[in-house]
Image 1 (tube, rainbow, N blue to C red):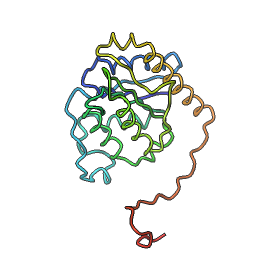
Image 2: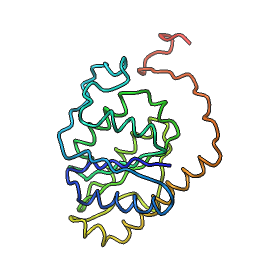
Image 3: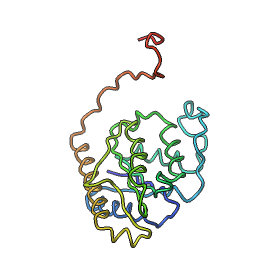
Image 4: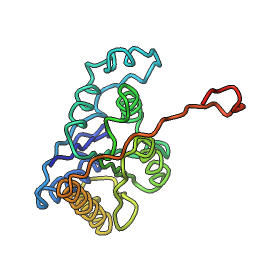
Amino acid sequence: MHVLLLNGSPNTKGCTYTALEIIASRLKENGVDSTIVQVGRKPIIGCLGCGACRKTGKCVYGDDGVNAARDLLEQSDGMIVGSAVHYASASGAITSFLDRMFFSRPNASLRMKFGACVVSCRRGGASSTFDQLNKYFTISQMPVVSSCYWNMVHGFTPKDVLADREGVSTMQTLADNMAYLIKMKHAFNEPLPELPRHYTTNFVREDLYED
């Protein structure tokens, strides 16, 4: 049992990392392994919409960790994405990383893997960032794991985060819930439901499309 943790903050040992470390420690207590992958420290090119990944199954710009992280995710039971708040949204690095990570391969390979995000901020913008990151999971048939509050910590330093008692408790509860759901999935080993036919439309007249 394994969970991929992505640190989308440019600070490798900052507030976001501290929140992910709390989660990793709690997952370990629950018998679930995890790996923290640093994303936000170096420039990440955004998706160019070139379409090459539709032929190769991988992003052509694969030297920045996107393909490696996607490989690890497909071997994992779930993922938790962490980001600092930049102008009331996720960091540019993690946004570009996730755009390419989720677009480069069929989302069917992520079905029923558990997803969650955690957000760190000094004061405001956490709710909009939380909403932004969760959308990657909900478009990919990944059940979103919840906690006892929205998954956010507040502070300017790691010490501040550790002093945020409600934030720490929220991270720990998130880890407990993630571990529980993973264990239940392994215990029942229920086959996935059959994929229904997917229709892609552009809000145009139905008579332009054949059934």
